[in-house]
Length: 284
Image (cartoon, rainbow, N blue to C red):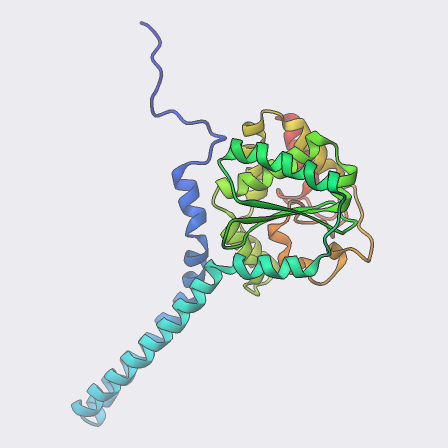
């Protein structure tokens, strides 16, 4: 029998439609899941109150109480829906906040080098309207955030000066892979939702940085550059003057290439830790 290609086969390293949809709806699902018990409890209390008023006072009072409860419930739902949508669009405000947090840096050569890499990888990942920005900081990090008209790509000056070309390409490919996975919005929301570390990491997508490494390495067909970039991040200690040592960084950590830049390598063995991701790519 002659071999036949399976038309339904898809590479495990390519984001599936189901995976993208899960990431796309993650903010909404998480938001309403957190409020489900409270809303059910309030609804039960209102129902019991209407029944008691009907039995003790009169049917007319019970009907009036039901109408009031429906109006209040509708207003509460409307408020919560507005809050949910603001989280879904959190990346717009976050992009503006990040631009204000850094000073532009880099020589004309740095800017041109970064723009060239962005153009080349943008074609690979089907991504355009990316505005590359070199920002002054001694830490090794980068982030991609939707800004309404496209995307802001922030790359620290230390990364631009210290990383080799293949390492820089690996970093940018990883960030573009996050967009291909549909993960940018949920990671931005996790950065502004005001949740504790565990809850915000779950909203951002635990393991998503690791997964984006796979997608990026498969797309550029060279995992070593990305692995070397992660190894550099894992062994780099930022100074106290760096943004990644400040109190602002933990509030935005999930959008950054190195999500644990403020922690020594031996503190965490999280799957999204830079050292773990680097070793995985070396063994890939």
